[in-house]
Image 1 (tube, rainbow, N blue to C red):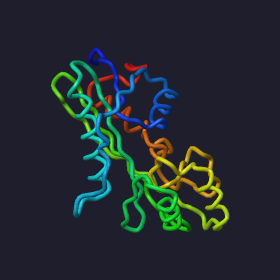
Image 2: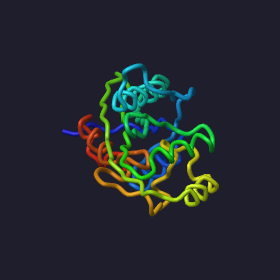
Image 3: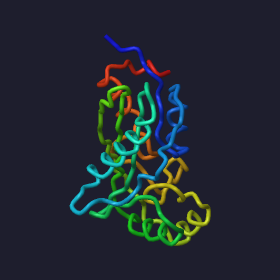
Image 4: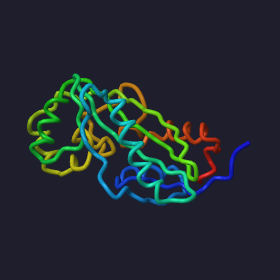
Length: 199
């Protein structure tokens, strides 16, 4: 039997995550964590472990201030040839990332954590999507960098921008944008809610 659903809270500043949940029909409020909860991996920490840890930190930070809610935290990184990439800090950093990704395969990892209040029960998971970036020209990369579309996005690219030199080989498209909706629905079910409870 499904539980009575408390309010759904998105613990994120990401406009892409907000848009994905909105377009999927979810009823929720946005309450970002007070601190950034971003950062690179610990020594020996994999991309999977990193995004799961940061998603949990974000969800718990927001849930601690709420009496009744289901809080979702999320974190996304890109991994290419063993190198983990978060959001670029500058256009120079973005160019470095795109040059590393150019002409090859890479993976996008998103960690999700649901925290149910009261009680702080947790459900976690990670979604992985494999993509290929074409061997785009320096001129194409320069135009994209000039557009500013790289800003605030893991790996310095926005799949939702409709880039014709970037394609998914395997996995979830919403994961690449920053919020794996399939995993989110699965975690809600694991937590005892029907997928439509928060719509």
